[in-house]
Length: 96
Image (cartoon, rainbow, N blue to C red; front, side):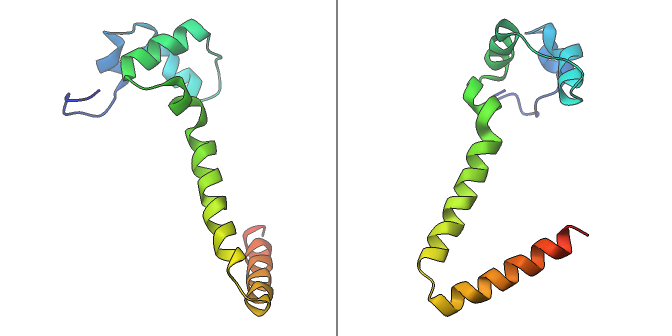
């Protein structure tokens, strides 16, 4: 909450939106769904848009992919072959 001096906490914001305190923990653990009305109340309490809550991770991922794609577009064929080898080695190592 802007100007509050402290980060969002369930207890602090449950005063403005009673559904927050018990529900957020269950949502975080994937144990509960959420209605549109409850999402609206949470967004109002946090003073953020629902897009921010629902799509931030996707948007950040898309931006990271776009940055990498732009770098690859400017590489020479030899640099692309090297990046492919590096990427393949990385993926193999990270899947172990």
